[in-house]
Length: 293
Image (tube, rainbow, N blue to C red; front, side, top):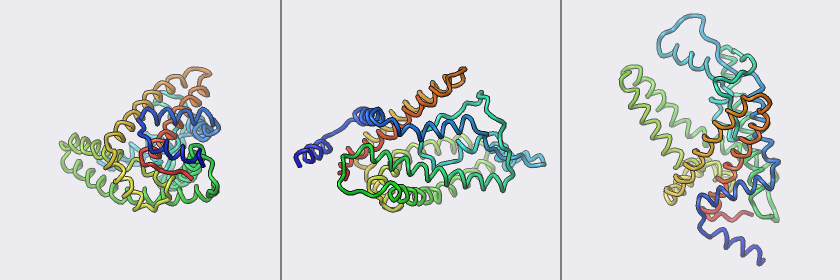
């Protein structure tokens, strides 16, 4: 009982973003097995074939042709899987990888659906496993399977709600640029601003689901309330995470292309990325005064 009271008192104490980062990496250092999620996914991205869209048999110089050309040039595994929450090390454009799988439109759509479903399931298991690393020893708890299943269903609902708003706005933006090409810079700037605001306001939705098992709508409402109360701390913490992640990703990518250094680079990125994801859970728990049971 005394230890429980001390833990609860500690959770009520203020914590800085640096403290959350320290706690996150300390957790990964104590339980390094969690890195296997990121290591396995990064190895697949580097050693497996990219998935791209076949170009149409005719030449289209319009907006649709440009869009299809963009999809042909990118790897769907790394850019079109929003359900993936596991940190990965993505190859650079100069990286030599196996020949890509060039799919027809129908095959490409099915591949995207399959990739997102698999990523959603694996990411949910990853988040549920992280939750078990940061909590004190509980008396009763849901099994890893049930917790992961609940996370997957609720994450899918949140992404569906966000997509129902973002996709129509994106279509409108594309139409505006098509009709008025000079508005490209303005529309692009607006989307960057919306992205930054959305990151702060709804960026902790996965952590809220992990701790509370809220439904999609309640998760977004809780994320809004949390951001409204702690917006400066959240913005500071997320900015630090982005700087660390982008900086180390460039470093590990440069290391990975050196002969014999792919494996150390993947492990290094797994450590950094998984530590940041764990730090997000620690940050939310401490700032929202969540009692983990």
